Length: 262
Image: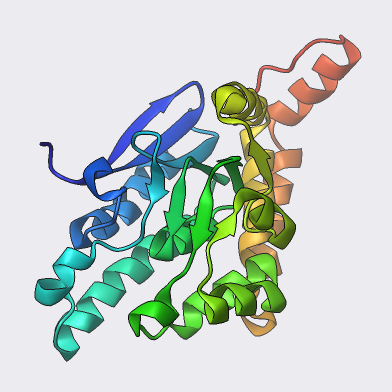
């Protein structure tokens, strides 16, 4: 058996972070959480990467949440709990605040911290047999303020209240209605549908994608913490770019633009 990890690969403009512990439904260990910020930074630094995809290894699960078998060692005692929570929080924040668009591709189980991790992504697509749950109320766990605020920002207070208070399992159809996912696809066409979407994203202007993502990040923060100047600078960079000229030229010539991120 290979060590549980979050694997990184990049191709065709997309960086893929694959949560790899299929024997435990891709449950996240402490080390896996701790590795996420560095992997996101790697994708951010790669000029060929247009978007970041999170997915689970195999076809049974995106992520079943935290690897509870570690709790006795890693999450017992005040200091251990704080260290573990810092690692989880840093992983979540890295995806939530990534400088490039983030997309979760979900097959099967998406529970607990895995569901919260998926919600940190800008977009979420799932197979139509996927299932979603945050079972904290069945485990006696306190669910942190920052996580609840993030979830409310993504799908609204009523949907979050239902998910957390009931601790029920949501179907993919439930997930679509509540906003947990944007779209469900049949398994036999999931790779084709999402692959076409990713190709479309990867063909777009990277500076424009960065400006859009910058605005999404700022608008997700409390109003007092938002910095419009950050977004204004990203937008100005678009208008000053060679890609802006290329986009206009390609439109007039009725061809696809060849963006370079400059």
